Length: 148
Image (tube, rainbow, N blue to C red; front, top):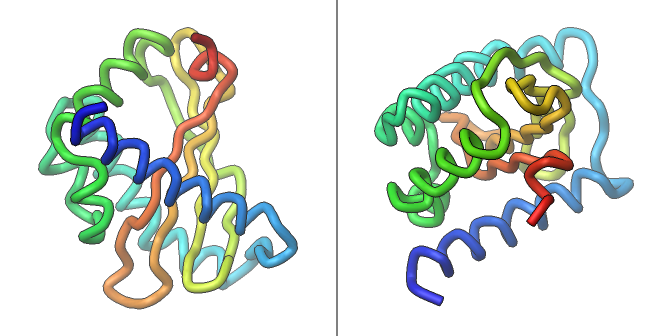
């Protein structure tokens, strides 16, 4: 396994750990004004990230990443992610917020993404609670992506 593959694995382990924490009893669903306040900065970050991803622009994609995300999801991993999404899911069509969670020092915004070949893709965007809010985790999941 080369260095970039290890970086992808380490990033995924980190993100999965956060998600498992979010799925445990420690996470709580945010509603009302608190949810809206998180979405006020999360939505523009998601726009920048997704626009950069689908335009093939790593700089835009990683604009709001914290240092660990920049190291774990470098340009090579970005290219691999983009190719995987495009080849397995087709063209991106839309997104909607599914839920907003709070877990420890993080907010997790769960999106439902629709693609040409799969309309049930989940994207989890993990953000730091402290300012400046930064992306510290990112995970895509769908039955199509889990196929070998």
